[in-house]
Image (tube, rainbow, N blue to C red; front, side, top):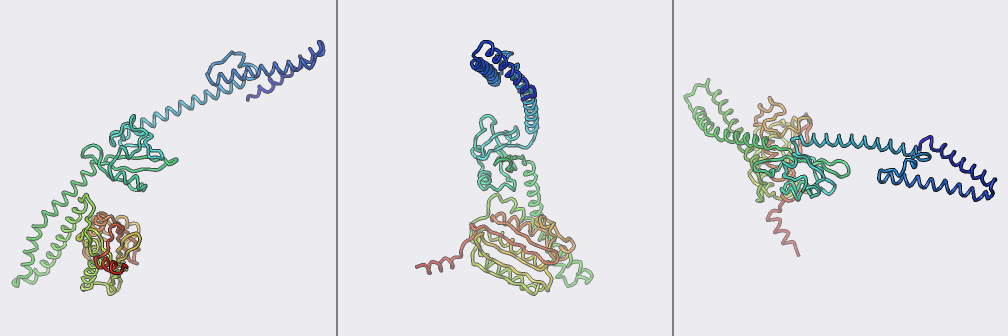
Length: 441
């Protein structure tokens, strides 16, 4: 209420009651005159308030007089408040238009979802990439419109820290989507067109696979000739060491080609690994025996089999996983070091760890250790052999089996590589199943 309202109201009340007092003393009936003055003031105030209510409701004033006097300042204050609110509303609408224009200009799709995963808003890019209709699809549950099984599983799992790649609604298109929670249980769905990146990946993968296959034949021929030269008794002694070195390099190239072909096959696989039971304990025992037969190995090389459970999957791929991990430990662990391989099962699934006391890996390099051809120490890696592809093969083979690779390492203290397989991949061997049947009452 403005500063002039209360004094004006006080003067009006004072004048009305002074006039009633004067008339009551002159004409008599003072109480009635005072009552009439109070009633008049009340009716005037009620009329003015009724006019104010009508103005607030319809925007029309009943009369100019209703806005004068007692409520004149209130009218003025309300007008100022309305003008400020109108200016704020204009600024808000202008900002909203700018936000919408900027989001519509984005190449990435954006969809705002409420707490029930229903579409509240989407930009033009989302309409194009996800095949949505802004007018028809608002208020619809997102999985009713984007029905790819991987996307539905992504929404139901509720784990949105990673991006999801899936085919787009248009033919031969690929999308990368991610949900970003914000506000009051709202979520922002970001969709990116990664068709070009996927095609480049396929081209690179096909190129590597084709080149690797083409190199196998000439390398086999070269290796055959070098072997014949090495066995030749008439060969000068001065050439024996170069020929032996060429044989080692050809063997290394053959190993690289083999690993490249294996990695390309794993990356190109679009379906999970099969469900054939694989005798992992027996496989680890054979790898352990082979490691013990090496001349250059750590003195302490142990194997702990705490379960006889098998893994549903591809035997060749699982052999690549465990042999690569064990060979890495053998290459980078000194003769006085220790290597332990462990196989166990718990409520989280099946696990295999290879622990060594080798050179270790700096923590900053652990996220990159599974990249192809990445080496922590290039000089040391070439000295002890290896292709730089082993851990990349391990990573992709585990992904094919629904598993993951966990790495803990410290420089100078050693490393522990742990393979985790989900419970759905575990299966008891036939001997254990028949034993349980015999023990059952």
